[in-house]
Length: 122
Image 1 (tube, rainbow, N blue to C red):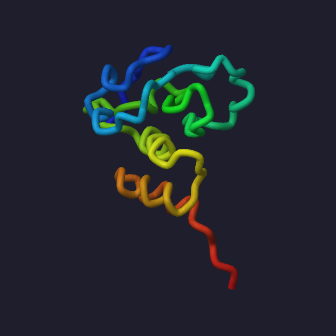
Image 2: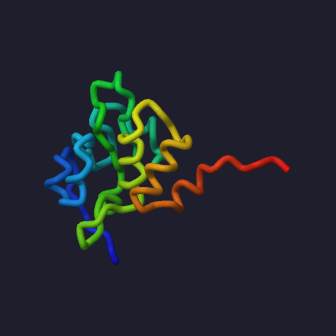
């Protein structure tokens, strides 16, 4: 299953794919080398995508993704990148804790949850 290229710029999620429909908390998806907030892309160059998941953020509910191919597959399914970021929107004001790991697993990306599990010291 390949990925589908999405044009750069701001989008309403359901215009990209009906797979976004259950996630009404996702207000928009900004695609391209930058951020919907106008922030510098240099600030997140090493990051593939980010979600505005702080309730105090005026852009709360937006997902910014640099790679046009990382939004949806050719079949219109959400990529792992989008599932990761949607989980952040579903868990406002949190990072990669237990709530986020449960959300990303429920979205069908348990491999993402495993990346952020705390390793026991032993």
